[in-house]
Image (tube, rainbow, N blue to C red; front, side, top):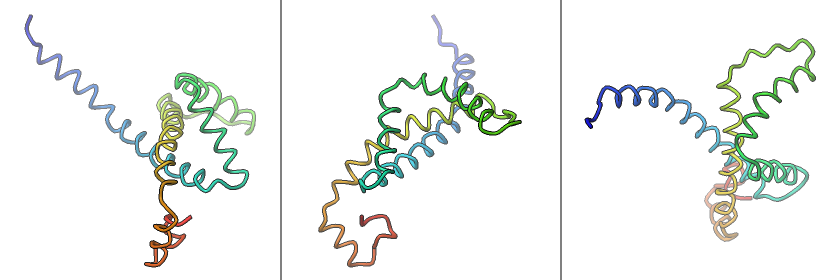
Length: 139
């Protein structure tokens, strides 16, 4: 059996076409995960509990469920909320939405312990050199 380089090249072109989507999903998920980790790391108010439900739901259900909910549920919900709304989004949009929400919830739980592990003394030291609450380091 010979190696079929033409077939390998064809498959690499197909796979290569998905790389921008993969990088976009990774970037959106990372940003979402960071925002969730910081918001949940502060542990105050109603937002903490709402985000906790979001993270628990997305981490405890299969990703295919989210894809189906995004693909079938979001357009239906938009039609109910906005009369006359017409769906112009393609399948790719809903896949990116579902995967970003799913991966973002997982990433937030990877980032949150790191965020919470910063000791009070380090936060005070950051404060003393001008890295205050606006920098995102002191909490």
